[in-house]
Every structure is written in C-alpha cells, then in structure tokens.
Length: 229
Image: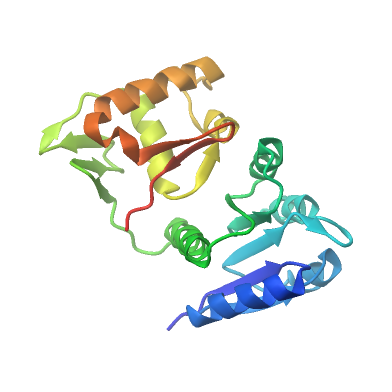
C-alpha cells in the first residue's frame, strides 16, 4: 500500500496535534513543521500534499507557497487560514495554492479536501484514470470533448467544454477567476477576458440545466465543481 505523505506547517501546537491525529487515523504519514525554517529543512523530501498555515512566527505561508511553486513543484497546497477576508483567500490561490480551509474547520471537511487534492495530483502524475466523468444526468468524455445528457449529445462550444474540463479535473477545489482566465482561450487561441468568462459560465450552466448546481460560485473568489460523494 502506497502511504501518502503530508507536510503540515502550523504553529498552533494544539491544532497541529489534533490535525495530525486525524490525518494519521486516515492512514496518512504526517511531518509537522511549526515554522518556515523547519518546513524548508524538510522540503527536500517528497510530499503528496502540503497543509500550510497563513500566519507563522517567522513569516507567512504565502512565502513558502511561492518558493514551492518556483521550484516547479506541483504538489497540492491547501491553506489553513483564520482570516475570513476574501482578499487573503484570493492571494493564496493566485500564488499557486490549490485550495483553502477556513479555521476553525471541521475534520470531515478537511479530510475531504485533502483526499480530493491528493487524488487529482495522482491523476495528473500518471496514475490510470477513467476519462469518462459522470455527474447528475450528464456524462462528460473528457478526452473526446463530448458532453451527453441521457445519452444525447449536448450542444456546447469548445470553449465551454474547456471550462467544464478545468472544473471537473479540479473537482472539489476552488479555482479563482484569474486561474481560469489563464487556462482558457477562444477558437482563435486568444486568452479570454473577465466578461467573456462570465458569459461562458452562464452558457455552460444553462446547458447543464438541472445539473447546473454542480458548479458552485464561491463569492469573491471563483468557482468550484462539487465533489462527488
């Protein structure tokens, strides 16, 4: 069995111990660092996910997030933030974080986010995947760029399907509008603007009909495709 390894960077000792216990109970191996200095000392090791507090004694989690991404590491990063202000959430996502959990968090929610991000990371790094994604009444053939509802093709533009693909591949993860803008382009291979993204999102939701609720709006941040149970 391949045990997944998590780096937990958190200076609150009681919270760190509780989080570590919950993760270990799920079968994860956990390395705890109480500050940036300790975290940097173990970063040479291979991790499957990083849980990163924003405010640390010797700096911020944003600093470490930037360092990890500058090394071209795509390991999933989930911010643990007590700051509810949307600007801080957006800042973390723009620096390359994959998700965030607001403190105080429920253990079940944290474990769900951890599992979803590790699964996505494994999928993108060569694990065998099923490229047929089913949700509600819809079936999305990701590689073939084909969406069906009740076995009938849904008429979507390539740009709408690219948007759906980004959301589905990051199931359960918040994607900021800027992240989507950086990854999407139109038929002429030009990157789309903010207004065009809003149009594509509305059209995609219209085409999904009763299944539009699978795409959640995270106010002031971006969008998230609901995680399947």
